[in-house]
Image (cartoon, rainbow, N blue to C red):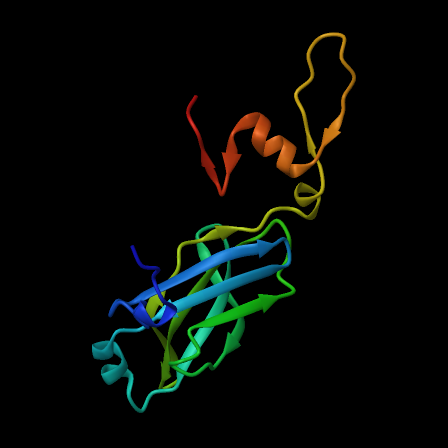
Length: 149
């Protein structure tokens, strides 16, 4: 049985996808893949990646960058803890932004969430703080999903 070599992995899957992930309470990470057909369609257009703050059903662009097709990822540093964001990949034409891809909305946790999570206390017990990892183990929450016991 042989090992999988890095050279055996495809460089892409021919799909159009834009993902936005929370790295920390102040940093978001976006990555994308653009199919050959979409790249052909975008030829001659300036690719734009926007980070938009989302509130009350509205998305307001906060950061606009112009990466190359082949970059494939971008870090957004200095985002505000506790806010909601989405990424948009597209182009400007005649002063209007045309999105090709939009990520799902992500919730950036408040700054305090990343340090300590309070534990539910029973009668007669004092309130204690536990580390985030201990809280995940105790309540079964990880990566935004709930596990069923």
